[in-house]
Length: 267
Image 1 (tube, rainbow, N blue to C red):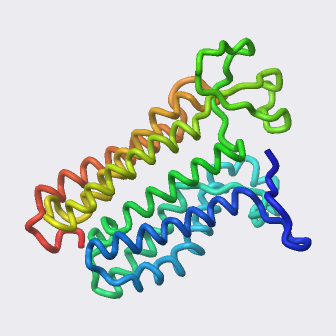
Image 2: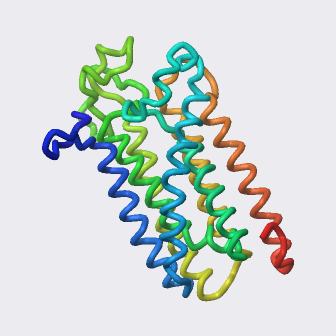
Image 3: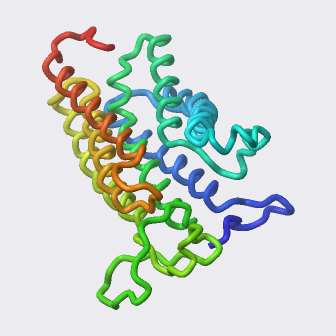
């Protein structure tokens, strides 16, 4: 699978970048629908997009560099080589949440309310992003036997140049990115239903729809982590971080739901 989708003149158009751009465009459409359901103006979403994309981009890169400092410590010049890839989804989330919090503080809006409004759009972007990892073969699962039986088992053929070192003799691997994308789309449908109910009936405290979605996404990442190709046995850092995120979401969900009548609780 080539990394370059096509050329515009002499400028290469990278496949993964095109998928991410499509995800952002689709997320913007979903955010427009969600804002309409909540009877909110769409202009704040545009403002958040204009500030959120560059900040998330930078923080995602910083997060990836810090997580792979063993390599970048000896190759400092590679830190600014964004076109080579390497971004942390957790860093991107931190960057966007920071922009949203600052915006809400400045405008006197409820941070948790806008998290609920944007939850479906954020989930769609995550799911399409995972599809991008599957298509570009950048997320590799555990190898499957060379004599893979024709029993309709989901498998991903990895081209030779993309196979991890030491696994060149394996052709098929578990499509872990496809697993995650499918489950994330299922969470998207669930959260979309919650969004409609919350906008119409206010069944939960503000932020609980987002926290529910974040909790499920973290649990999906933890479970799918067992299918990742890992050099070390046991739980890896991504799974531990997912458990931490899930625990924080569960605690905050419980606290907000039990303090829903306090309008100033973590506004």
